[in-house]
Length: 169
Image 1 (spheres, rainbow, N blue to C red):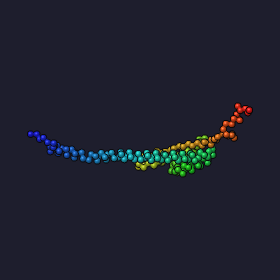
Image 2: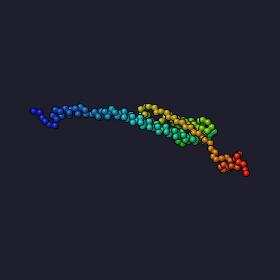
Image 3: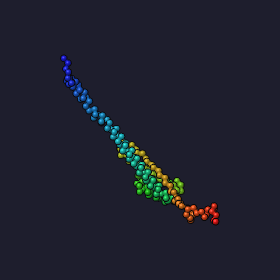
Image 4: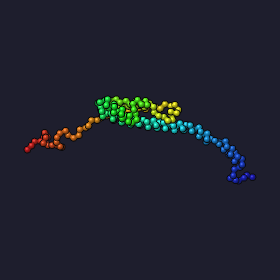
């Protein structure tokens, strides 16, 4: 006579326990295999973020240097001195740690500053002997002469007495 019960037979329970025992450790092995790629991806994300941050700092220093030097044009020597001083104040000194700061006039009123840093830090890529990219940014500033405002004549508004159509009565 068949049993009408919601309970499993003893052989089904034993078979299920055997299957679970064979699958024990699967999660740990999968985690161990995926841990290395996950750590490499996290390290790459940190390195790329630090490269973007350094590039932003280089751009800001180039902008400041170009603006500091352009007001001295057409005196290129003085403009170069002030541009190099501004770059140094922002952490980029020409010839220190491989950094190069190039100042070149584009015209009598425009100055271009280029900052190149070949040794950007890479916290994780450096441990794997991967070379970091050399970063370079340019900034061009233009000095616009003052614009005269108002009329160069010594009168206010429309003076009908000086108009060629004016005829006194």
